Image (cartoon, rainbow, N blue to C red):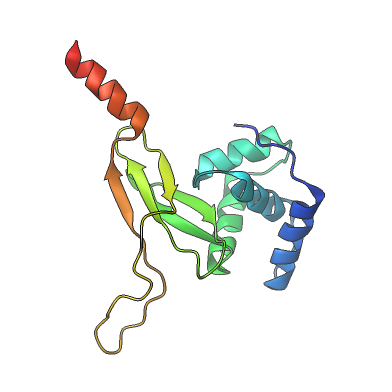
Length: 154
């Protein structure tokens, strides 16, 4: 799935973001951030790898995993549990921007749901500290739902 060529401002933004976190600015890290920034939905490792390959950026699986791990550790990106024990990744917009996700159990697609309210600060037992919270709704996406209805009607 090729991505449009990133604007110069996006390249500077990715480089600045990495540098602001004290990281080494590498071509892979910049390309991963740009792929996540331009995607309308969380991406799997394979989808990110395909986007990098489509943009002519040489990489290997280990380098890509390391880049994603570093971006998550720094809070630049976040992991979302996908189906079949595969992580999906999205760029973290800000600490204030929290949203739910919808996971289609049939095709594996994960969509961001900005309009679903998420609890900003749930009550936790004394001494517990919240690092992050995820709200993932499961079901069938519109395409799979229609396909399921058609399949039952025949």
